[in-house]
Structure formats: C-alpha cells, structure tokens
Length: 153
Image (cartoon, rainbow, N blue to C red; front, side):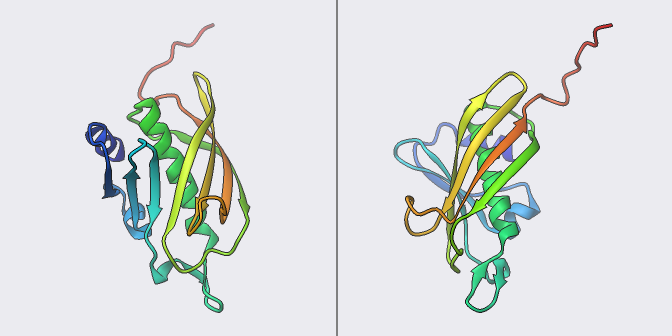
C-alpha cells in the first residue's frame, strides 16, 4: 500500500522512487521525490499514452487531474501520517496552459485542516515552477473508515 511505502521513506533525507501498490499509479508513471528542503513532489513521467491531442501534441486532462489528486493525497499522507486513503469530496481544476509531451511535476499544500476535512491547493508545472499548467483546490474527508463512531441518540 502507498501509505506503507511513505512510512518507510520517512527516514530518507532525499529520494526519488516509483509509486508502488497501484496499477493506475504505475500506468501514469508516478514517482515521489523529496528534495533537500524536505518538500515532497510527485512526478508523472512522460509516456505517449498520456497524449490527448495528437497535433500539436498535448497531455490529456484526465491524467493531469489524477496527478493533482495523487499529489494532494501524498501530501496528506506524508504530513498527517494517515494509513488510509482519504475520500475525495471535491476537486476544482483550472487548466492554465497546454501540457507539453514531457514530465510533469506536482506539489500540494494543506491549506486548512480540521478533525474531519482537509483543504489543499495543488499545482502542476513542467519547465518552470512559476508557470503552472494546472492548479486545483481539493477537499478530502480524513476520517479513518475502519474506526467505529459512536452514534448519539
């Protein structure tokens, strides 16, 4: 599971590893990278399967949205040490530029977190961090589904 992989990487100072445990992550070519500052970045390695428009070649929006969501999940799992997959409540995406046929980088930041919900901002860039190709606002339910809640009458 992805959360187990993240837990094993906590002691590593700097790393770049492929994401394990999900066929979808493998198909997208997702990698996790931690830089010298401790920041987590999700990388989507380029593949011809990610092209949505053949001429001029542009990345399909579906994998870009998946990258934004996965980068947000990784940020939540990394910062909160959760061992379950949070439920996505809402995703609002702004496509800003055409995605070129090359690797994409994504990062997310927890904007607000409560006991039940977390709000994040995420962005994807390719060549320049300051020129994102897409941004998103995401809302997650962060209650562990395996924990039983006591119902009040």
